[in-house]
Amino acid sequence: MLYAVVDIETTGSHASEHGITEIGIVITDGKRVLEFYETLVNPEQPIPPFIQVLTGIDDEMVASAPLFEEVAPRIFELLQDKVFVAHNVNFDYSFVQHHLRHAGFGLNTRKLCTVRLSRKVFPGLAGYSLGKLTRQLGVTMERHHRAGADAQATAEVLHRILGEDRGGHVEAMLKSKQHQQQLPPNLSETLIQQLPTGPGVYYFHDAHGKVVYVGKANNLKKRVLGHFAGNDTGLKRQSFLGHIHEVTFQVCGSELMAFILEHAEIRRLWPLFNYAHKHPVEAFSLYVFEDVKGYLHLVLDGKKKHLEPVYTFNMLVEGQSMLRKLIQQFDLCPRMCFLDRTAGPFLYEERGEAVEAYNARVMEAVASLRKSLPTFAVVERAEGSADEACILMEEGRFYGMGYLPRGVPVPQVEELKNMLTPYPDHDYIRGLIYRYIQRWPGKKIELATV
Image (cartoon, rainbow, N blue to C red; front, side):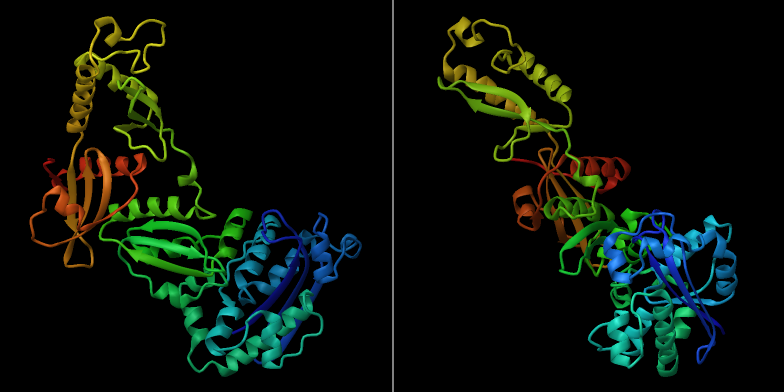
């Protein structure tokens, strides 16, 4: 078996927008070097100053170097039919494959990552960057951050790995479907193997333990691995993968519970890479307030953080339609409900109506609205548990969710609330629940309210 050990220097971190400035390739049979190739490459774009300082490669050095298209045939010849090896292989492979594709060559080879293999074969080292690893293994490296020297050092690391691999890690990695090769370089495969296959919510953490992404899944392991499939070389994806150092999870009794928990956790944690749920939802609420004379008013307004609404609406027009019905049904004053902005006396002033009489009709209207709002539980078998998953909607609002002993009748609302974990209500969550019971009406249990 032949290995092509590769190292590259680039103008940036993602292949779709950055170029290669230098490439080094070492061909080895696993014991000795058979061929060595190294060349500077003109990236056709400026090299950022910090990269010039890091690598020592500047714009003047690559000005007369060949374009990648010119050296692509030779590079493809060296790489095809060999195992592609690199330190953090996904980075080097994504760049080389991308630029070869643009030059008309399709690279599709097996891969080995010396970072991951070193962690398995040489556990407990102080660090696994190429610089730290070579020092700890006693491997000579003359010019760090130059492609040829780094490729030669990586080849020697590969030789050490192959010589010390008593656990068959190299063979296992080559025989696998290569999913471990697709994992972010800082994410341990052990954490992936510990993921369950049932529904739940997963959390990606950065190097400091901060949650940078929250997701939900019907199959946690499959969904997490799905993030690392494909060869997207864009900036957004590469930045996302680079931030992932750890994955944790929370098992849920059903996919619906996972959907709800995901939304609640995103709004609680505000992770860096969650975009879809961060957009504000246009929502309006109906409030009751008392004026200086003691009369009650109904008003539609945007959602207020510290006020308890009578009801909430996704759109202003929904709230206005409902309020007009209440005005007509309970003989309320349109001006006191702020649907009539014309000047003139209030209804109670025209009639000489006492505070108590008018307020009684307002509260009757509020009570009728609340009474019309549904109170029910969604109950279904909790996957992987002897309990049943339960979600409570109280008077049209999401209250919370949790678990009930299987076979025990669902208790009355107040007792049930003591058995569940409360979560913030939100239009998005309510929509999820209503759509779910439309699909599975048999899981809905109507509950009486006092």
